[in-house]
Length: 50
Image (tube, rainbow, N blue to C red; front, side, top):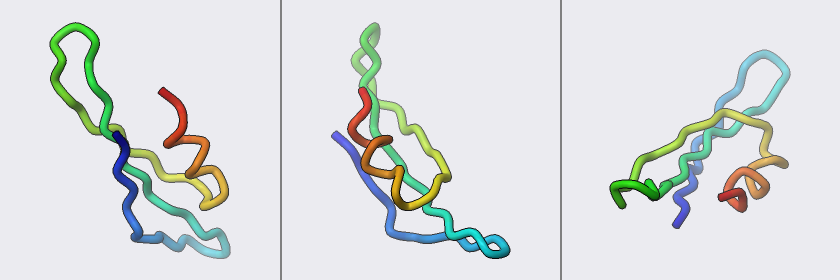
């Protein structure tokens, strides 16, 4: 499962997007959230990774 935020961050001339992904722990089965700030064209790669 993945959750993507639609908020965009702007710093100077660069446009950045914050993506949030839900990851299930293999040991406990609990879900954790992984956040990352990246350029908008790399969001789909980040969400596709397991």
